[in-house]
Amino acid sequence: MSATKNNVYTVSQLNGEVRHILEGQIGKIWLNGEISNFSSPSSGHWYLTLKDSRSQIRCAMFKGRNQSVRFKPVNGQQVLVKGAISVYEPRGDYQLLLESMLPAGDGLLAQEFEALKLKLAAEGLFTTETKRPIPQNIQRIGVITSATGAALRDILHVLARRDPSIEVIVYPTQVQGAAASQLICQAIAKANQRLEVDVLLLTRGGGSLEDLWCFNSEHLAHAIYNSALPVISAVGHEIDTTISDYVADVRAPTPSAGAELLSKDKGNKAEKLMLLLSRLQQGMKHYQLQKSGRLSQLGHQLQRHEPQRKLQQFEQRFDEMQMRLENALQHKLSRLTLRHQQLHNRLQQRSPASTLTLEKQRLQYLTARFNDASSDYFKQAAERVAQASHKLDTVSPLATLSRGYSITSTNKHVIENAQQLTLGDEIHTRLKHGEVTSTVTKISSN
Image 1: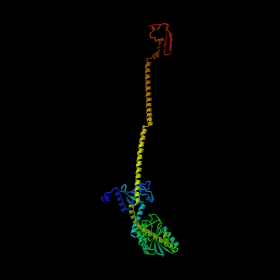
Image 2: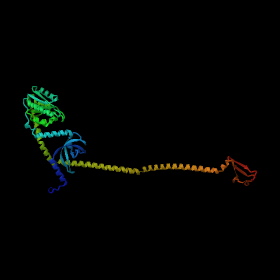
Image 3: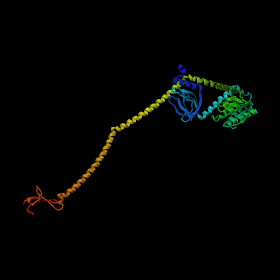
Image 4: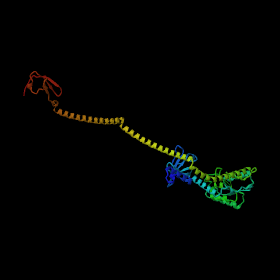
């Protein structure tokens, strides 16, 4: 308390106070935006960012809530969400805790429907005290619908089967499109001006939310509320609900059910029971509508002390840490993979196999150079030998013999002078072709 009085907070205290202020004063809101950074971890929770052209906000949608979403959100999708403003205290970020999510088109219509319903309820158009009673003995029924629609055929078929004496006056009008709401209001005004029927049955067959949108008009709601004639709303199927159902004196789930409600059969017990059931449903809806605001207020107060909110904070923190851990592990794995690749490359560069390959290539290169050098050397040597042989031939005695000369010798030496011989010596004469052995029989000197 002393810290609070001195305006000295811890960070946790400040974030907690901010969360209480946001949750208590703003509460739940509708928000339209584009999804980005969508993630869905193993916990089943959803985390995303909603953004427009200038701003963004973090959002979380926990598992118990996102199971009711009928589509899978994707980045870039335009959606309408409903949620409560809160603060994620561990990080100090304010965020939106989502309760529902709709595609932008359907979501805007749903938001407009809820806003108009709350507005008209506040104006008292839905109160049971203002509901007009349905006449007991109905002679004429005014049907406000399309003259060519299946709803009119169903109504006429039911009335012909149950009570053919009832007259039906049709006030034909459009029941779909932009101009339909105004035309329906004109049909109600015409019926109230003529006062020729006992009750009005406002009806059409089923369709999409856009098809039934003309029955969600504020102008039409006031026209039904101010009608002097009782109005029964029988629009669409049993699951369809429109503003006209809330304002009308009685709501019938289908056109055929509306016709049965207004016709008597076997003492009219079933009709009375249906009427009482319809009034009970209207009362329950009105009571539920009155109490929804109070329940929402109490819900905001409960959230300030709700253990589930703290558990969601811890779950969100756990998901955040898990994603950070996964990112860190992925980063570490990438670094280790890169390091491993670098070491592998270095090992490959220094591998004996690589060295052997390089040396083998070097040996092949040197062998080729050796072979080329040897070939050049032998070629040059052959040329030198040929040159030397040619020179030797020029001074060789054999060359002299080829010109008709001969060489005479004894067993010891070549005879250059006739005085070296004596009669009877055996001499050898070498000619160009062959040798001759002879005996000296005469010696003469020049």
